[in-house]
Amino acid sequence: MVGKKILAVSDHRPCDNCGIRPGTEMIDKGPGGKEILCTRCATVREISNLRGLTPKLKVNYKVGDKLIGLGTKSEGDGKSIDLSVVQENAMQIIAGTPLDIKEDERTHPHYVSILKFDANNASRVYKRTLTIGLFLDTSFSMDYSVKVGFSETLKELINAKGPGRETDQLDPGEELALRILIGVLYLGGDEGLILLPAVVSIPFATRFLENVSRLSNFKFKSGVVIVKPKHPVQFAITGAGTVMEEAKLTKEPVPKRDRSTKEEASENSLGIMFASSGLITDETVETTAKNYSEILRLKNDLGFMEEVIRKALNSKNNSLLRDVANLYGEIIEREPGDLTKRAKETIKVLEDVTSVYVQNRNRLHLIAYMVKERAKTQDESIRDLLTLLLKEVANSPDLRGVIPLLDALFVVKTLRSGMS
Image (tube, rainbow, N blue to C red):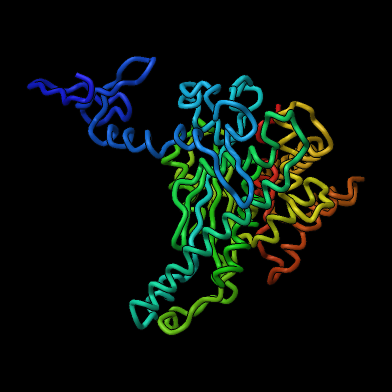
């Protein structure tokens, strides 16, 4: 019966995977036995056997002049890894959990980020191409820029390395790069969708978008949603799409009557949403943005996001990817250092400030509390971070701008992924 359709006059057993459509295909599950799937889930499973996580882990990737993969620094090309365990914990692997899955996810939860990005106003540019040749040239140029920008950013992450480990293990920067590579769902044209470890998601996304924008001369909007590995990924992807659309940042909006002849001047932007519990969907994103509109901006320029991480880690390096690789090294080796301590302290301060707003919903009281905390703290990096948030208000018209407090908290909480 393996691979054969099951025909019956009576009601069919529901698909073991989706539980909605009738199961008609009996599939060999491996050591675990067999399962009955509907035609759609069976097709997805067939494609996954060629393009899913396990095939991606069985190969080595050449990035620049370096090879990374399970077989790069050890014998067996990954054969020593129990692939059945890997299949059952696919999202945990992408999130940054060690491949041997020895740690308890309840005490050291790694989070996974969903990054979705799209070029601003690309369709309008394509519409203005006069010939098919010019259209193809513009389209291929954009596709090439996206792929080269991705490759360049991966090289930077691999070269960041992080603290050295045993000779048969990948360096932390290489570990993170491998997980990003296996988490690519699609990448090309003027858009992309990537699953990647939360701890590196913001520095990687900002650097990647900067590289692509430089190569293509386009500006991009992007959205990052951070969830637990067992969160239904299809809902997280729709949530990331909603965050991306909300994140579009324009310099000077063009009046509606002029939009047919003029384009809005846009900037590279990144919105972020963090879900430590509950389900995140496009509806919950919209509700959260509405309920916390005074402290959640979403329309963040890349420089602001990078500066938040720089202040949080008290970074003195030019490369945030190097700092994050070092932090990830501390996390997976269970050897908390200065970076781990810095991340936890910053999260604690921002959570305290956020709770003040949640308790009374008074914007002016929040600003006063932030000013008081800035004057009271002896930590220069915390003081600089609070100053950065207050400047966003001070530089806004009539001092009525959004205080991007939740945005900063979400960014810093990505750094805690995998910590106890």
